[in-house]
Length: 244
Image (cartoon, rainbow, N blue to C red; front, side, top):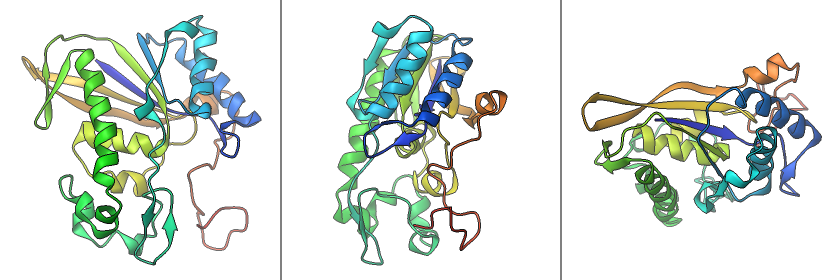
């Protein structure tokens, strides 16, 4: 089985929709994806992701095939950072707030950190991974420890239209790693496509392997400059790039 994790186009967060740039990005993405064999489409209920998914679905005449999954919405959860600052998302921390704490890199223990324990983030994380595991079970792959038992092997492709913060949680579960280094050391730009395949090297036992993260080749091919959304300043003091 193949999983495509797709971030929405350039967002207008205030109105939860795509900007004009985001619409162009989504159109280029749709042209790319129409060449793929996508068997199932699942989307976040948030407007920017739905609009991105719908753009593709219209191109291939499959608007009625979109399935909305509430657990695919952005992973927002209020936390109080070590600095005392409160924010609505549990990432975008400064390096000094997380990078020197070994537990933050631990798949089993990252949720034990004081800022996350106080926010009961384990419950929010569980909602997402339970939703993911339930979906994979429907498609024949049942979570068993840190891998998946194959009940119905297949070469289907499922596409998940969602958000970068949420994508990090999905990758955390599928690859058995803490989401912290994904949230902070990787960035999936708008309309990027991350691809994972199952590997069933022994009969009935499968793991997921990422063979492409954050592909935006369709934007370059279409002459569309990648959005800066989700990034921070490349160099300190640059006035047009966000610092916080």
